[in-house]
Image (tube, rainbow, N blue to C red; front, side, top):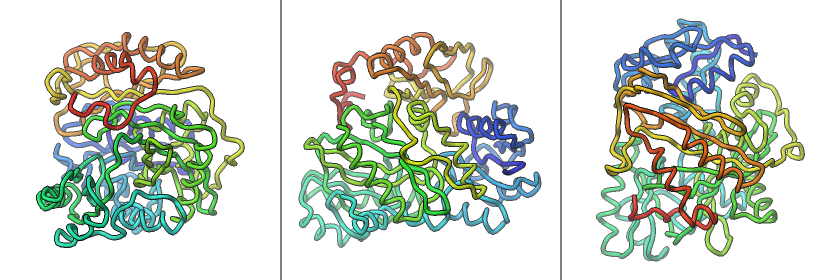
Length: 444
């Protein structure tokens, strides 16, 4: 086991990783920007190093500064969390070259599955269904000819994309050229890569993802699925596990396909394979996230597996401790993403000082956060500030527990999306689990 791990992230995910390390007897090193000098993850860690100014490109995205911090503190390994450099093959490779263990998949796996066109090609070879579209990335000039074969409506998507960026829906042929140009510009600005691919647009699909774990000995298991269909502008708002849309037979097929694809990629560590589920119950591979997910707690609550600890153990060279038959679903879990945003003003960011904080508790309630009264939420980073996760013996109890926990949550001084989530749980479609990714389109 490692003796010291540097956590190359901030906020609640940095604390989440540090807590897992502490339970494993591992010392931790926090990194922080000048804007995060008083952040809770800095206070919690055994050591801390400032890695640059507030702007992320000069701090949390500064590979040289992060590697230097690990060397100076004699850390043996680096955990990237999610976001920032978590899916950067360059960062994983820089860690390897510096003699540090990257707690995640290999740079080669990140590159392979991070290129959505390459991942689609591998899925096809592994016999995993994909949404009809281009087999390779296309230039703007090639897009028009490819679109005629795929048919309209379709989606123009960034090959290196994520988080809903670099995506445009095209309803008619005459809209294609403009959509391609805008998507390419967005992709270049966000990911440094303007490559695109085209994909048929599915109407009213559900977004279902499968959690997998792999080790360096070729063992891969799944930890069932999560439903992530409630989204705003392709950003997830609420996740639940298991998906209420799957029959046992469809669940078995979907999870087996995910394991098959992870094995084909020689995947190690925790990863998530995302699928679209159409109205006829057919699933299609969408992309793979080569990191721990924001919504991983719902899987932990329904399986009892600590995914971060398993990431760390796998990174030390241990084989998986779980066989597939030993992982069982128990109950139902729901996660609410609470952001520092004002839902009454179009979800406009709401940074500022947290004047008062009261967190929910009681049976089946988990709160992942990095807040305290007096903490100033900075304006420079992602607006996620609290993950409220509830567990129930069944979905009905989980919904009731979610309502109760959201009522108990008090964050004063800034606006948050908690009131939006309270209203969301009164939506008939959410109560009935009869929803899809377009449920909130045009409404929020």
